[in-house]
Amino acid sequence: MDIRVILSVLYRASVVLGVERSVCCGLHVVLLVRMFLTFCLLFIGLHVSDGCILVNRSESLRITAYTGGSVLLPCYCTDLHTKPQTGFTWKYNTKGDEWEKISSESGQYRDRVQLVNGQSQGNLSLLISHLTEEDGGQYQCYVQAVGNVYITLTVKGCTLINLKSQTITAHIGGSVLLPCSCPDLHTTPEEFTWEKRNIFKSRWEEISSESDQYRDRVQLVNGHSPGNLSLLISHLTEEDGGDYRCGVKQSEHIYVRINFEEDPSKSTAVVNVQTRPTTSIPSSSSSSQTPEGTAFSQTASLEFFIFIPVLLLLAVGGVFYWRYRAGQRRVQMESGEQRGRKEQGTQDEVMYSTVVHSNTARTPTATDAGDKTEYATIRVN
Image (cartoon, rainbow, N blue to C red):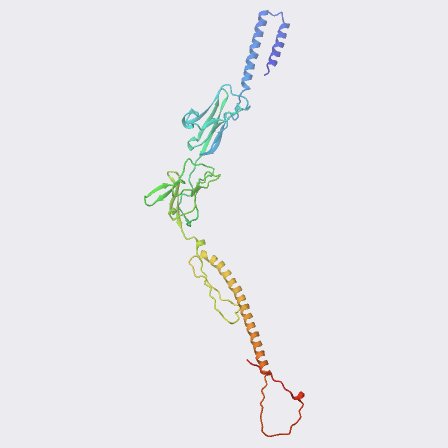
Protein backbone atom coordinates (compact mmCIF):
# COMPACT_ATOMS: atom_id res chain seq x y z
CA MET A 1 0.00 0.00 0.00
CA ASP A 2 1.24 3.53 -0.80
CA ILE A 3 2.51 5.53 2.20
CA ARG A 4 0.67 8.59 0.97
CA VAL A 5 -2.64 6.76 1.34
CA ILE A 6 -1.81 5.89 4.94
CA LEU A 7 -0.89 9.48 5.78
CA SER A 8 -4.11 10.70 4.23
CA VAL A 9 -6.13 8.29 6.36
CA LEU A 10 -4.30 9.40 9.47
CA TYR A 11 -4.91 13.03 8.64
CA ARG A 12 -8.63 12.49 8.19
CA ALA A 13 -8.79 10.58 11.44
CA SER A 14 -7.08 13.44 13.25
CA VAL A 15 -9.56 15.89 11.81
CA VAL A 16 -12.47 13.82 13.01
CA LEU A 17 -10.94 13.52 16.41
CA GLY A 18 -10.23 17.30 16.46
CA VAL A 19 -13.92 18.10 15.95
CA GLU A 20 -14.77 16.32 19.12
CA ARG A 21 -12.65 18.52 21.35
CA SER A 22 -15.16 18.09 24.12
CA VAL A 23 -13.69 14.66 24.69
CA CYS A 24 -10.93 14.37 27.16
CA CYS A 25 -7.57 15.32 25.74
CA GLY A 26 -5.91 12.15 27.12
CA LEU A 27 -8.45 9.87 25.49
CA HIS A 28 -7.89 11.67 22.19
CA VAL A 29 -4.14 11.08 22.30
CA VAL A 30 -4.58 7.37 23.13
CA LEU A 31 -6.91 6.79 20.23
CA LEU A 32 -4.61 8.60 17.87
CA VAL A 33 -1.63 6.50 18.92
CA ARG A 34 -3.61 3.25 18.53
CA MET A 35 -4.76 4.14 15.05
CA PHE A 36 -1.23 5.03 14.00
CA LEU A 37 0.15 1.74 15.30
CA THR A 38 -2.62 -0.21 13.56
CA PHE A 39 -1.90 1.38 10.21
CA CYS A 40 1.84 0.81 10.64
CA LEU A 41 1.33 -2.89 11.29
CA LEU A 42 -1.04 -3.12 8.34
CA PHE A 43 1.54 -1.46 6.10
CA ILE A 44 4.28 -3.87 7.21
CA GLY A 45 2.01 -6.87 6.65
CA LEU A 46 1.08 -5.73 3.17
CA HIS A 47 4.71 -5.11 2.30
CA VAL A 48 5.70 -8.63 3.35
CA SER A 49 2.79 -10.22 1.53
CA ASP A 50 3.73 -8.34 -1.65
CA GLY A 51 7.22 -10.08 -1.61
CA CYS A 52 8.11 -13.49 -3.17
CA ILE A 53 5.11 -15.66 -3.94
CA LEU A 54 6.25 -19.06 -5.23
CA VAL A 55 4.84 -20.46 -8.44
CA ASN A 56 3.57 -24.05 -8.00
CA ARG A 57 3.81 -23.64 -4.23
CA SER A 58 3.19 -26.87 -2.29
CA GLU A 59 2.90 -28.78 -5.57
CA SER A 60 4.96 -31.74 -6.79
CA LEU A 61 6.51 -31.63 -10.26
CA ARG A 62 7.92 -34.56 -12.26
CA ILE A 63 10.95 -34.17 -14.54
CA THR A 64 12.79 -36.76 -16.65
CA ALA A 65 16.45 -36.38 -17.67
CA TYR A 66 19.27 -38.56 -19.04
CA THR A 67 22.63 -39.60 -17.68
CA GLY A 68 25.49 -37.44 -18.81
CA GLY A 69 23.19 -34.50 -19.54
CA SER A 70 21.89 -31.54 -17.54
CA VAL A 71 18.55 -30.65 -15.93
CA LEU A 72 16.97 -27.44 -14.63
CA LEU A 73 14.84 -27.74 -11.48
CA PRO A 74 12.34 -24.81 -11.65
CA CYS A 75 11.62 -22.58 -8.66
CA TYR A 76 10.78 -18.89 -8.99
CA CYS A 77 8.63 -16.09 -7.63
CA THR A 78 5.71 -14.66 -9.52
CA ASP A 79 7.67 -11.41 -9.79
CA LEU A 80 11.15 -12.31 -11.03
CA HIS A 81 12.50 -8.98 -9.79
CA THR A 82 11.42 -9.71 -6.22
CA LYS A 83 14.08 -11.19 -3.95
CA PRO A 84 12.97 -13.39 -1.05
CA GLN A 85 13.50 -11.45 2.18
CA THR A 86 13.91 -14.51 4.39
CA GLY A 87 16.27 -16.60 2.25
CA PHE A 88 15.82 -19.97 0.50
CA THR A 89 17.52 -23.40 0.24
CA TRP A 90 17.55 -26.45 -2.01
CA LYS A 91 17.29 -29.85 -0.37
CA TYR A 92 17.57 -33.48 -1.49
CA ASN A 93 15.63 -36.33 0.09
CA THR A 94 18.09 -38.98 1.22
CA LYS A 95 15.60 -41.38 2.77
CA GLY A 96 12.19 -41.11 4.36
CA ASP A 97 11.73 -37.67 5.90
CA GLU A 98 15.42 -36.80 5.95
CA TRP A 99 16.43 -33.91 3.75
CA GLU A 100 20.01 -32.87 3.02
CA LYS A 101 21.02 -29.39 1.94
CA ILE A 102 22.55 -29.26 -1.54
CA SER A 103 25.93 -27.57 -1.83
CA SER A 104 28.35 -27.22 -4.73
CA GLU A 105 31.26 -27.21 -2.29
CA SER A 106 31.04 -30.76 -1.02
CA GLY A 107 29.37 -34.12 -1.30
CA GLN A 108 27.58 -35.65 -4.28
CA TYR A 109 27.02 -32.34 -6.10
CA ARG A 110 30.52 -30.85 -5.96
CA ASP A 111 31.05 -28.51 -8.93
CA ARG A 112 27.86 -29.78 -10.60
CA VAL A 113 25.13 -27.42 -9.31
CA GLN A 114 24.53 -23.69 -9.75
CA LEU A 115 21.76 -21.10 -9.60
CA VAL A 116 20.66 -19.54 -12.87
CA ASN A 117 18.98 -16.38 -11.56
CA GLY A 118 21.33 -13.99 -13.38
CA GLN A 119 19.67 -10.57 -13.27
CA SER A 120 16.37 -12.01 -12.01
CA GLN A 121 16.49 -12.18 -8.21
CA GLY A 122 13.17 -13.97 -8.09
CA ASN A 123 14.46 -16.93 -10.17
CA LEU A 124 15.60 -19.57 -7.69
CA SER A 125 15.95 -22.46 -10.19
CA LEU A 126 18.77 -25.00 -9.77
CA LEU A 127 20.88 -26.41 -12.64
CA ILE A 128 22.45 -29.86 -12.21
CA SER A 129 24.99 -30.99 -14.83
CA HIS A 130 26.76 -34.29 -15.61
CA LEU A 131 23.82 -36.26 -14.34
CA THR A 132 24.20 -39.76 -12.98
CA GLU A 133 21.56 -42.32 -12.11
CA GLU A 134 22.21 -41.55 -8.40
CA ASP A 135 20.90 -38.00 -8.96
CA GLY A 136 17.38 -39.30 -9.38
CA GLY A 137 14.99 -38.71 -6.47
CA GLN A 138 13.01 -35.96 -4.67
CA TYR A 139 14.11 -32.34 -4.41
CA GLN A 140 12.67 -29.39 -2.46
CA CYS A 141 12.94 -25.65 -3.03
CA TYR A 142 12.19 -24.07 0.36
CA VAL A 143 11.57 -20.34 0.95
CA GLN A 144 11.23 -19.50 4.62
CA ALA A 145 7.84 -18.13 5.70
CA VAL A 146 6.61 -18.44 2.09
CA GLY A 147 6.42 -22.13 1.19
CA ASN A 148 8.15 -24.81 -0.87
CA VAL A 149 8.07 -26.60 -4.24
CA TYR A 150 8.62 -30.38 -4.55
CA ILE A 151 10.24 -31.95 -7.62
CA THR A 152 10.64 -35.66 -8.45
CA LEU A 153 13.59 -36.19 -10.82
CA THR A 154 13.93 -39.39 -12.89
CA VAL A 155 17.33 -39.99 -14.49
CA LYS A 156 17.37 -42.58 -17.27
CA GLY A 157 20.60 -44.48 -17.79
CA CYS A 158 21.87 -46.64 -20.66
CA THR A 159 20.85 -50.28 -20.75
CA LEU A 160 22.18 -52.08 -23.80
CA ILE A 161 19.69 -53.64 -26.18
CA ASN A 162 20.02 -56.73 -28.38
CA LEU A 163 22.57 -58.55 -26.24
CA LYS A 164 22.69 -61.49 -28.68
CA SER A 165 25.98 -62.24 -30.43
CA GLN A 166 26.28 -61.01 -34.01
CA THR A 167 28.49 -62.04 -36.92
CA ILE A 168 29.50 -59.50 -39.55
CA THR A 169 31.17 -60.34 -42.87
CA ALA A 170 33.69 -57.80 -44.14
CA HIS A 171 36.44 -57.47 -46.76
CA ILE A 172 40.13 -56.82 -46.23
CA GLY A 173 40.93 -53.22 -47.01
CA GLY A 174 37.33 -52.11 -46.49
CA SER A 175 35.42 -50.77 -43.47
CA VAL A 176 33.01 -52.27 -40.95
CA LEU A 177 30.55 -50.80 -38.43
CA LEU A 178 30.19 -52.65 -35.11
CA PRO A 179 26.69 -51.84 -33.72
CA CYS A 180 26.08 -50.86 -30.10
CA SER A 181 23.47 -48.42 -28.75
CA CYS A 182 21.29 -47.46 -25.79
CA PRO A 183 17.48 -47.81 -25.97
CA ASP A 184 17.19 -44.01 -25.90
CA LEU A 185 19.73 -42.35 -28.19
CA HIS A 186 19.62 -39.18 -26.06
CA THR A 187 21.17 -41.07 -23.15
CA THR A 188 24.87 -40.55 -22.54
CA PRO A 189 26.48 -43.49 -20.69
CA GLU A 190 28.62 -42.57 -17.73
CA GLU A 191 31.34 -44.73 -19.29
CA PHE A 192 31.66 -47.48 -21.88
CA THR A 193 34.40 -49.50 -23.57
CA TRP A 194 35.10 -51.45 -26.76
CA GLU A 195 37.31 -54.51 -26.35
CA LYS A 196 38.80 -57.22 -28.59
CA ARG A 197 39.52 -60.80 -27.63
CA ASN A 198 43.23 -61.68 -27.68
CA ILE A 199 43.20 -65.38 -28.52
CA PHE A 200 46.91 -65.78 -27.78
CA LYS A 201 46.67 -64.29 -24.27
CA SER A 202 43.06 -65.43 -23.63
CA ARG A 203 41.92 -62.01 -22.42
CA TRP A 204 39.96 -58.92 -23.53
CA GLU A 205 42.00 -55.86 -24.49
CA GLU A 206 40.56 -52.33 -24.74
CA ILE A 207 40.54 -50.73 -28.20
CA SER A 208 42.15 -47.32 -28.46
CA SER A 209 42.74 -45.04 -31.45
CA GLU A 210 46.17 -44.34 -29.96
CA SER A 211 47.33 -47.96 -30.03
CA ASP A 212 49.60 -49.18 -32.82
CA GLN A 213 47.09 -51.63 -34.29
CA TYR A 214 44.15 -49.19 -34.48
CA ARG A 215 45.90 -45.85 -34.79
CA ASP A 216 43.77 -43.45 -36.90
CA ARG A 217 41.51 -46.34 -37.99
CA VAL A 218 38.72 -46.37 -35.37
CA GLN A 219 36.09 -43.78 -34.48
CA LEU A 220 32.64 -43.48 -32.93
CA VAL A 221 29.77 -42.51 -35.20
CA ASN A 222 27.35 -41.15 -32.60
CA GLY A 223 27.15 -37.66 -34.11
CA HIS A 224 24.23 -35.90 -32.42
CA SER A 225 23.03 -39.10 -30.73
CA PRO A 226 25.12 -39.69 -27.59
CA GLY A 227 23.37 -43.04 -27.06
CA ASN A 228 24.84 -44.44 -30.30
CA LEU A 229 28.05 -46.22 -29.30
CA SER A 230 28.75 -47.96 -32.63
CA LEU A 231 32.40 -48.33 -33.64
CA LEU A 232 33.70 -47.82 -37.19
CA ILE A 233 36.91 -49.62 -38.20
CA SER A 234 38.46 -48.69 -41.56
CA HIS A 235 41.32 -50.09 -43.69
CA LEU A 236 40.71 -53.59 -42.35
CA THR A 237 43.54 -56.10 -42.11
CA GLU A 238 43.56 -59.83 -41.42
CA GLU A 239 44.52 -59.12 -37.79
CA ASP A 240 41.22 -57.24 -37.31
CA GLY A 241 39.20 -60.43 -37.59
CA GLY A 242 37.88 -61.99 -34.39
CA ASP A 243 35.57 -61.26 -31.44
CA TYR A 244 34.68 -57.79 -30.12
CA ARG A 245 32.43 -56.59 -27.30
CA CYS A 246 30.83 -53.29 -26.27
CA GLY A 247 30.33 -52.80 -22.53
CA VAL A 248 28.45 -50.12 -20.57
CA LYS A 249 28.16 -51.90 -17.28
CA GLN A 250 30.27 -54.80 -16.14
CA SER A 251 27.28 -57.11 -16.44
CA GLU A 252 26.07 -55.90 -19.86
CA HIS A 253 27.94 -56.55 -23.11
CA ILE A 254 27.19 -56.83 -26.82
CA TYR A 255 29.36 -59.36 -28.65
CA VAL A 256 30.28 -59.00 -32.35
CA ARG A 257 32.45 -61.28 -34.53
CA ILE A 258 34.16 -60.17 -37.75
CA ASN A 259 34.71 -62.72 -40.55
CA PHE A 260 36.48 -61.96 -43.82
CA GLU A 261 35.64 -63.11 -47.35
CA GLU A 262 37.13 -62.34 -50.75
CA ASP A 263 36.02 -59.04 -52.20
CA PRO A 264 34.06 -59.86 -55.40
CA SER A 265 34.91 -56.48 -56.90
CA LYS A 266 38.58 -57.48 -56.99
CA SER A 267 38.12 -60.89 -58.69
CA THR A 268 39.52 -61.22 -62.26
CA ALA A 269 37.24 -62.28 -65.10
CA VAL A 270 38.96 -64.10 -68.02
CA VAL A 271 37.51 -64.02 -71.52
CA ASN A 272 38.94 -66.35 -74.22
CA VAL A 273 38.65 -64.93 -77.74
CA GLN A 274 39.74 -67.07 -80.74
CA THR A 275 39.98 -65.84 -84.34
CA ARG A 276 40.79 -67.88 -87.45
CA PRO A 277 42.01 -66.41 -90.76
CA THR A 278 39.69 -67.13 -93.70
CA THR A 279 39.48 -66.16 -97.42
CA SER A 280 35.73 -66.48 -97.61
CA ILE A 281 33.29 -63.74 -96.71
CA PRO A 282 32.51 -64.12 -92.97
CA SER A 283 28.94 -64.84 -92.07
CA SER A 284 26.89 -62.48 -89.95
CA SER A 285 26.67 -64.96 -87.12
CA SER A 286 29.58 -65.09 -84.70
CA SER A 287 30.53 -67.66 -82.18
CA SER A 288 29.87 -66.72 -78.58
CA GLN A 289 32.58 -66.72 -75.98
CA THR A 290 31.83 -67.83 -72.48
CA PRO A 291 34.07 -66.73 -69.56
CA GLU A 292 35.59 -69.41 -67.46
CA GLY A 293 33.20 -70.68 -64.84
CA THR A 294 33.38 -69.24 -61.40
CA ALA A 295 32.00 -70.42 -58.10
CA PHE A 296 30.79 -67.02 -56.96
CA SER A 297 27.43 -65.82 -58.18
CA GLN A 298 28.50 -62.27 -57.46
CA THR A 299 30.84 -62.24 -60.50
CA ALA A 300 28.11 -63.23 -63.00
CA SER A 301 27.02 -59.68 -63.66
CA LEU A 302 30.64 -58.50 -63.98
CA GLU A 303 31.41 -61.21 -66.56
CA PHE A 304 28.24 -60.34 -68.46
CA PHE A 305 29.21 -56.68 -68.82
CA ILE A 306 32.71 -57.70 -69.97
CA PHE A 307 31.36 -60.27 -72.47
CA ILE A 308 29.02 -57.86 -74.31
CA PRO A 309 31.72 -55.28 -75.24
CA VAL A 310 34.00 -58.09 -76.46
CA LEU A 311 31.26 -59.36 -78.80
CA LEU A 312 30.71 -55.85 -80.13
CA LEU A 313 34.43 -55.44 -80.79
CA LEU A 314 34.53 -58.78 -82.62
CA ALA A 315 31.54 -57.82 -84.75
CA VAL A 316 33.07 -54.47 -85.71
CA GLY A 317 36.40 -56.16 -86.45
CA GLY A 318 34.63 -58.75 -88.63
CA VAL A 319 32.93 -56.07 -90.68
CA PHE A 320 36.20 -54.23 -91.31
CA TYR A 321 37.96 -57.50 -92.16
CA TRP A 322 35.21 -58.48 -94.63
CA ARG A 323 35.38 -55.12 -96.36
CA TYR A 324 39.16 -55.35 -96.54
CA ARG A 325 39.08 -58.86 -98.06
CA ALA A 326 36.37 -57.87 -100.54
CA GLY A 327 38.47 -54.91 -101.68
CA GLN A 328 41.51 -57.12 -102.20
CA ARG A 329 39.51 -59.65 -104.22
CA ARG A 330 38.10 -56.87 -106.40
CA VAL A 331 41.59 -55.48 -107.10
CA GLN A 332 42.90 -58.94 -107.95
CA MET A 333 40.04 -59.59 -110.39
CA GLU A 334 40.51 -56.22 -112.12
CA SER A 335 44.27 -56.72 -112.51
CA GLY A 336 43.69 -60.24 -113.94
CA GLU A 337 41.24 -58.97 -116.53
CA GLN A 338 43.62 -56.21 -117.67
CA ARG A 339 46.48 -58.69 -117.99
CA GLY A 340 44.27 -61.03 -120.16
CA ARG A 341 43.26 -58.20 -122.48
CA LYS A 342 46.90 -57.21 -123.07
CA GLU A 343 47.93 -60.78 -123.95
CA GLN A 344 44.99 -61.17 -126.39
CA GLY A 345 45.83 -57.90 -128.12
CA THR A 346 49.41 -58.95 -128.63
CA GLN A 347 48.40 -62.27 -130.17
CA ASP A 348 45.96 -60.58 -132.60
CA GLU A 349 48.49 -58.10 -133.92
CA VAL A 350 51.19 -60.65 -134.87
CA MET A 351 51.09 -62.07 -138.45
CA TYR A 352 53.28 -64.84 -139.74
CA SER A 353 54.13 -65.18 -143.54
CA THR A 354 55.92 -67.93 -145.54
CA VAL A 355 58.08 -66.99 -148.51
CA VAL A 356 58.73 -69.75 -151.18
CA HIS A 357 61.62 -69.31 -153.60
CA SER A 358 61.37 -70.91 -157.11
CA ASN A 359 64.03 -71.13 -159.81
CA THR A 360 61.52 -71.06 -162.69
CA ALA A 361 61.55 -67.89 -164.58
CA ARG A 362 58.22 -66.21 -165.06
CA THR A 363 57.13 -63.32 -167.09
CA PRO A 364 57.22 -60.18 -165.06
CA THR A 365 53.83 -58.96 -164.04
CA ALA A 366 53.08 -55.48 -162.94
CA THR A 367 51.40 -55.17 -159.59
CA ASP A 368 49.81 -52.36 -157.78
CA ALA A 369 52.08 -51.87 -154.80
CA GLY A 370 49.74 -49.51 -153.11
CA ASP A 371 46.80 -51.98 -152.89
CA LYS A 372 48.67 -55.15 -151.90
CA THR A 373 51.22 -53.79 -149.52
CA GLU A 374 50.96 -55.44 -146.04
CA TYR A 375 52.63 -54.37 -142.94
CA ALA A 376 53.64 -56.67 -140.17
CA THR A 377 54.49 -55.65 -136.71
CA ILE A 378 57.24 -57.67 -135.16
CA ARG A 379 57.41 -57.53 -131.38
CA VAL A 380 60.78 -58.20 -129.88
CA ASN A 381 60.65 -59.28 -126.27
